[in-house]
Amino acid sequence: MLAATPTLAQNELSNFSATGRGGVVTTFAPDYQALGINPANLGRQGTSLLSFTVGEVGAGVGSQSLTNSQLKKLIFHANDILTAAERTALVTNLTNSNALNINADVTAFALALTLPPGLGGLAVSVHQRLSGHVALNQNSADIIVNGQNAALVQQYYDAAGNPRSGRTPPLLSAALDGTEMQLALTNEFNVGYGVEVVSVPGVVKLTAGVGYRYIQGVGVADVRAGGGSLSAYSSLSPIFDINYGSLASSPTFNYKSGSGLQPVGTGNGFDLGLAAEVGKVVRLGVAVTDMGSMTWTGNVLTANDQNLKFPQYDGLTNYDVVKSLIDQFGTSGQTLFTYQTAQERRASLPTKLRLGGGIRISELFEAGLDVTVPLNQVAGNLPTTFIGAGLDYKPARWVRLSSGVSGGAGYGLNVPLGLTFVTPVWEAGFSTRSVFGYFSESNPYASLALDFLRFKIGKS
Image (cartoon, rainbow, N blue to C red):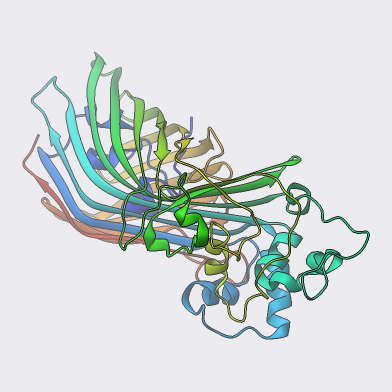
């Protein structure tokens, strides 16, 4: 069957049932869960006139190189002191193209309506998205952990930061080749519509859909070094607590101060999709999501290639690697980069192609296959292709079990599991993208999605 592109940085991580079947969602997602996935699913005849939810959440963090104990210290025990041996091991294990991946999704509110026959379906939602991706080479991992004590730095500078005679520091594009540090945090206000466009009874039904989202950008950072070039920019809300030093008073810097999730950018996104039911069993879907762009206007900094300079910090004393990474996006005197202020920065949204196939035997059993293909390399998109196969099974009318297998998108091979309790008007459940990931010492991956307030009212 054809496949689709569920991304861990996309809405299905807050969809607890999709998480339990490994992110397979393009042909499964009903009602408001189709927003950001495949709006054409809204054109199918629903099982209820009205469905809504409040507070559907999901989060995941994983690494293909850190040990389980290292990852848990980074995330849950960042203040634990680093010994010399642990420092060396941390540098070694952070040297990886998927050293750290962090994703979180929250659907604060969503609602879907099945319109009168022939008019399709409509849905709206308020959604928050967080995505982080870290790829480090040996030099960047060493500098993030050890600062001015990193081996590469000491080759070109003495202990006081003076250049060593006869040695010219390398360009960052060469020293950090293969390094990526990306972060994206957004608020999204979505609306989608789907309608049936072709119907041959007993043979095929084809629906089409379109989605639009207004996006508030809370923060973005995108640093990439490779292929002989380096690019870096950031635009971060005051919640990230970045010290901009003298840059804050620059006339070309739109400085945003204060507290909370203040937007520092806005954008518009679009989704297009098609869905087909062949006979009464086979379902197919294709969608392109997150077309559009963001314009970042607050706290915008950019940086270009430059020679390695002497870091103004002597390295970590604890496991707070995440803070050290965030510091690289703008902290005065604490970063590898020399930033320039800017009034704005325009960037594409993380566009994806979604192709999906599934079979629906009855209300009791459905299975499908999705493949994830990012269409650009921007902060918030998948680092690599994602593939998932999953199924839903109802051993009884009141319970649904989900499982499958998935891999890619910066994560290893995982076996998901989900449990949903079902009544005619209410659903609640929880799931994980990886049954063994939280306990596995290699390729650790901790994820959880849950929702206890999903309601369906009326028969369509």
